[in-house]
Figure 1 (cartoon, rainbow, N blue to C red):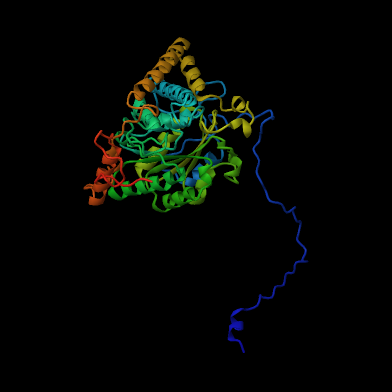
Figure 2 (figure 1 turned 45 degrees about the vertical axis):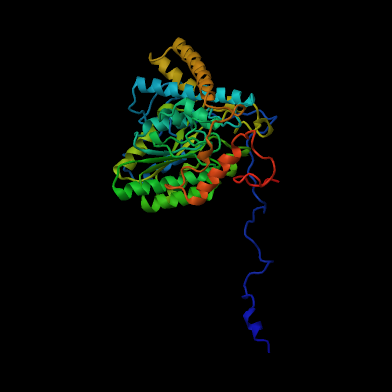
Length: 452
């Protein structure tokens, strides 16, 4: 007898057969979500039905159960009439608001100039944040300077608020001598150590678990520093999102996690990133508070950030914030959005334009004028042009980026190992211009390696 047969086993008997009746069956089909509008469609978004006074502002140590409606709804401060109302009105003065407006406008002019330069072949790649500047600017303004931020690649305004010079940002895009990453990162992957901004990462989902880990370190050391991190709606479909929320739920470190819901992850609509109505509602499953905010309302975003940061600094733990906004430009300069979305979709977005909304609010309250707005626009356009010209003086793709040969071997070891020292010496010798006495016979020059 073959004893191996007893290891095969048999199926357990079941009382149910394939012919068993199913009560009130629904049609069986794979659900494939679709974008609401495609090229050729006429977009007709419904206006936001939530009003500025619809949601209370609980104490910052309130349990997550009191925030369930806030995660499913939409926190607003600026109404359709352009007036501020409701309990979420932030404690922020006209000067700060004007500064926020200027930073958003600067980010937009920066984007426009970089896209134009990319089209001229003077940059290889750029990512625009047009239409969602509030998410970066209001968010960064609410944090303290010693807090640590983990941005995504659509937060140029965050870098500007944190003090990174525009020339340094452009240098990173070019990869020249004034690039603090020394040409080792992809374009638009900024980092700014002086401003406590951690490098942007191509696999953007990694920002969330790394940010939670940094916040855990602060909590372990007893430091009242808060960590902020931003991802897009597409990244919220990745495992890193849930890994981060699970660690945040278990260890309750001081962090604020943001999902910037700008409707499109490249050509994939946000409908394929979640089966629920909102991303903020996911927080409840992890026993964390969730806030869903009008991401084009500067006052609402600043207020939500201030609430979540205070909660974290008081020891109340993390908050998940969803910022509802719209990406008005292409995903990047390598993208053609006319292939997957209606061309007029951005103009029909019910959240409007964040710069226009804040400008109208300030003008209506006597803190800004149309002439001042026009003058600032002109000045910022000139600033972006001058910054690019200055940045190119440190090296261009056409003339050379200006990195010394040694930079290939630096910033890894405190003391360079002998093998790298030898490799660097060989590369320096091989890349030096040939002299008249240099032999062209392979192997004859002692310090040269054969080629080909």
